[in-house]
Image 1: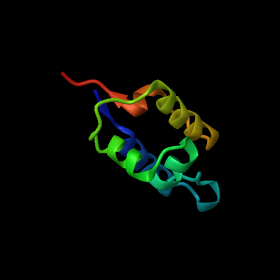
Image 2: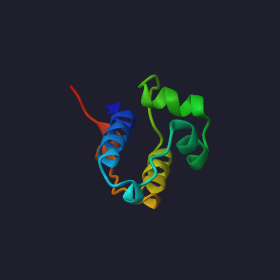
Image 3: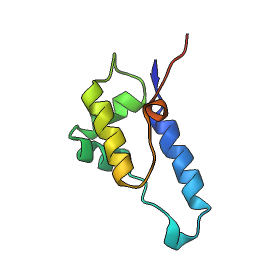
Length: 84
C-alpha cells in the first residue's frame, strides 16, 4: 500500500485554482495538516513520501476528519492505494 495524500492535495489545489477566488476552499499545507492531526511536520512528510512502514487507523481517520471539516469529501481511498 502507498499513501496518496500528496497526490490528493495536489489534485485539490488544481481543482480549486480554477474556481472563482471567493469560492475557493482552503487547502492545508503539510505543516498545517500535521498540526491539526497532532503529529510533527517531519512525521507527516515521511508518511506522504512513503518512508514509513505503516499508518495508524487513528491518524488516517484524523486526516480524513480534518479534510472533511474543510469541506472536502475525503475518503480512505484518497489517502491510501494498493499496488501489487
